Length: 484
Image (tube, rainbow, N blue to C red):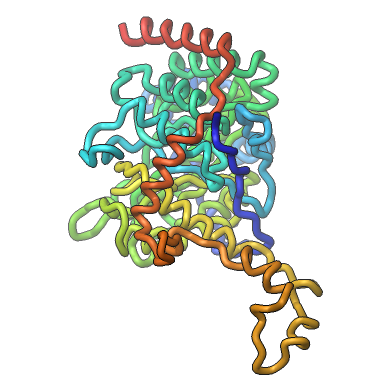
């Protein structure tokens, strides 16, 4: 029997922080339209080129560069749904996107694990994917599930195995970060259809979505974009994600990097809308910096304010946004750097209004998994969540009568009002957990204990046996055909 599963606790806030004003947003959008129309974006896909040509875009089949007239861009973008539904295995965990609510998940696609039992560093496996999916399922900070590490023991069909093991261990919406190409994605759609029972149900409550990465500067990935078209045809949401690096794959200015990323995202979104008007698409720009002395990839310089501007750009286009948070460059489990780099992220990305957010739980710039790190980042998440809640100001909380009764120099401990509210007024985080003699415990020790407890006690209900048998059959077919 499984421990009672906590409900999802997204960040809900009445507050909003604008990083860009309307003039700046208009200027960025105008620059994107100019780049798409005059410079163009490369689409190394005959299927994509054909769609663009059929709709009047300027297509150079030799260079595979597409230049899209701005009117075509704007008309296509008008068909995008603003708040698509992300369905879960458990209907109670379906995500209905809305203003003022940010749904978070773990980081994804790491490839190294510090083994929870042995402490040895090794390549990630399918079993690790399932372990972290189970932990995700239990934590209230996690509204949906990413593939946290890759199933490197499953070869070419690993994306499908990752989906399968996640469904066995997780009841929330699943967002794949590894499915690419028509063949893999068609198998993914078939598995989702078996899970839901019909194509209509997949379209109504899509149980999966997909991250589709572009190639900076101004290039689409053939396998990614053709896979996106397969999912979009089935009504499954896709997230167009650009990851420009300032100074190498993007200009060394904030505005220039945003425009490069935006042009990639918008051109891909236009393709999907031309092919399947109304298909759900998310906007995401997760940029980084190149260190001018070493050319090293840097995710957290001291000035990193532009991280959240991309959310406002998405909304300016009328699109939902996937924002980035967490993902420290520290390779250590804890320490000053691992928290300092990311502590403000959940606050700021939520104030920007991002509908969904990724990033919790990995170290070493999104590549290294310590299973207990997700508990430490979960704590930072809830600090932000409580900070952004609206404060209750009413006769009960003002406590004027109680203050009057105690008076100057008195003490509130004996008051019934105090006994009523004291247990909930202080919410303990990982640094305030007590041992048997009332001393504060080591946070990492506590985090490891929580991981062990979840794995021992939380056992999500897997898909029904007949559904699982059919999914296994599809996997066996995929393994045979795609690994040949």
